[in-house]
Image (cartoon, rainbow, N blue to C red):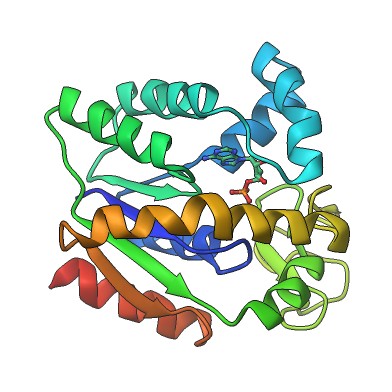
Length: 214
Ligand code: AMP
């Protein structure tokens, strides 16, 4: 079972991918996470990607497709959840080739539909536990004890450097101009399913589970 979660920044792709991983022995393949790890480790890819990411623009198709290929070669258990990839037509074509070469195919492309007006608020307020990665939000989900992670007890939290009002406009424009146009490619093959990304986190997960079990 290989699925793509598609939607604009802040739609909840990462949140939903990690919830599905926990229950299904699937693997989350987030090019954003891979690139952030590369930036942190100051690898050649990270050094190239850092400024591009800070501006909210796209890293090259060749770089992200290579990251996905390398990750697929490590095995993906019961299947892959692509989160933040593909983002361009060239990446969608690269993914076809990468999967076919491994005797695999896509089962579903799940589009999380959201009201763009709320996305900026969702993104600007979000932060994660620096230790375990649990997600929080200034308005929507504070830790039960202020300053202490509910899951692991850490008191260190972090925010993404590109989660600022200034870069969000660019990231939205990139989504509209480069990523949303790949939907018809999957629609003609009957792969696209839509889920209301404005619903509660649990409800969104439940709607995706129905698709995966259908
Ligand atoms: P994300 O965590 O998915 O929001 O990605 C954060 C940033 O990483 C994006 O704004 C891009 O700069 C870069 N990035 C992540 N995935 C891709 C991709 N598939 N293609 C190009 N750039 C990407």
